[in-house]
Structure formats: structure tokens, C-alpha cells
Image (tube, rainbow, N blue to C red):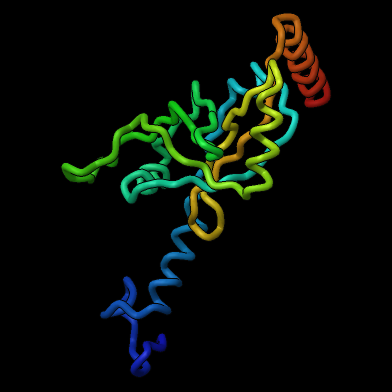
Length: 181
């Protein structure tokens, strides 16, 4: 039994016989909890040293958020830039929604990121120093069902830094193998 705005009614196995708000919210909570989406930019952690990270909202169309919920997005070769005090992400690939119509979104378009004014000013100031850039590191869906992007203020690694990172990773793997036996 669930309570609609008018009276108590008996739910069908799939939900309500009509669209009451309480049953819709229950279905939405179950859907969000059952599908954790976490898309990472693994190459960024190899190429850059992260100085500071920020969690930003992202402006999306309806078909884009549906594609992200299906896991059809990629952060490879993405970067962020400023235009008139606003932070934008470039080259983020969100596949066209399979069930979309003729007004489906473009797969690689620039998308606006949402941060507080204070965070935007700090990021813009810090990114203008030579050698620093802003890189998206992770795209995920939060508990409310909203898409969020974790961006990092990053400094590029030199070739020997990358080799050192690989050596450390191999050493950790060897230790794990040794202790597993």
C-alpha cells in the first residue's frame, strides 16, 4: 500500500497504477542506488601530478545524462579552459543516446562546469601559472542522481617522473604478490 495525494491505493507489482510522487521517488532511489557510475581518467594520473581537486556540476542535456547513466562516456584527452570567468570542459566524449531521436546531442561538444565563484577565481588564478593546467579526473553520478565531475589543478610530469611512478607501481605489485603467497 502506498499513499497518493488523494487516497490510499494498492500498488501494482511494477509500481503505482498512476503517477503519484511517493512511488516515483521510491523507484528513483532504487534506480540510483543500483547503478553506480564512476568513469575515471586513468591517463591523467600518469601524465600529471595533482595539486588540488574540486567537485563540479556539469550542464547536460537530457540525452547526455541518460548516456552517462548507461556508462557511455569517456574522459580521455579532456581538458578544461576558461571563457569569460566560466570553466568549460573540452573533448569529453558522451556517446549519442541509443534511443534518442533526431534532436540527439553531439558526442564531443564543450560543456560548462559549475563551481562557486570563489573556486572559479582561485582555479583561474592558479592555472595561469606556467606548467599548470586543469584536468577532469573522474565523472560520477551522486546519490541525488546528478552528474558530477572531479577536476584537478595539475602540473605536468617529466619523463623521468613517469618512469619513477611505474617503478613504484611495480614494486607495490611485487610486494602484494609476495605477501599473498
